[in-house]
Image (cartoon, rainbow, N blue to C red; front, side, top):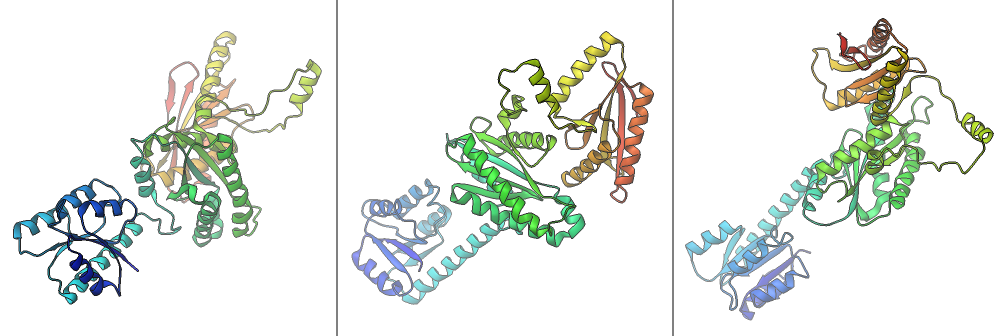
Length: 450
């Protein structure tokens, strides 16, 4: 049943309104403006009936006070008046009142006007909900998350913002179709809602990118525990949706930023979390990382070994799993390696070259985000199938990769670039993508643009 607050200085008018409306609505009465405002601090009704002329403060004054409160400014108001005051009605409507009802009350007119306004209000709320919800998953959408975080812009509220990205999701759509892909996204949405409860806000930003916002002063270990629990649940449930295929394995990569340390509004927190997410993608996927740790180059989180002798140390190092193929690193680590190689080649007179690979559409234009992700995934595959174990590669932005070739001449660099481009043409057939490259001598200027 809808709740209506009626503020009127006349006890008789309050009694009449309850008799007219009592069978359809729950009516609360207040005999002054101050009494009405005190009531509104405890309960927010669906509609307010305000007498224009009350003893302590007018209905207009009450509405002015309501407009200062974010929770009350959207509550519909109908003014009650005993006089035909044209100027007063114009003033009230300009303030945002929905209508005026004359005294003494005509029961049919009163009921029909209130019913009409409440119906309009419900329709408005329904449209607002639709505008702020993701159509597929029924989670909040990007606009909702932006509004939520930007509303807390000026506050000292603490919290964690988290970007989640499905690893290998494109392969699900390619192999099983978009119907299965949509089922995966919907199931992920339900898992997120179940795991985080009411303490956070969950939204789908678009595609396979989701976001969480946790209000409060959490310990980092608590946040990591929540993310790891989500990852385990996803691995168990979502992989069942792709029929336990050996060809596709779904996992989650997560980047985390902290409010207010890493930012306050949506754009700042998103940018920081996105850098942390990129770090995870470059270092094995299926994990989570904090922006602060990424910025500080805290790449190895394992404990250092306790004091050992040389023989023990060699044994420990040799027990580490050895993987052949191109050595993929994060961008900051790549810059450090580039500087080291540059100094080394000057001292030893050995040649080293760098290749900048750029993905474009067939017209040579930049790609939209979705196509850029598709293009860079194909480029990563082409690089891994074309390079040696002692070559070093890193992603640079959304459309580029950098390759560092050790002990390689300019001719070798060009040959490797052509080999990567040839493999890319083969992998990207039908995708309307092209690959360009630049070859440069480490520490010198660019030799060629192709």
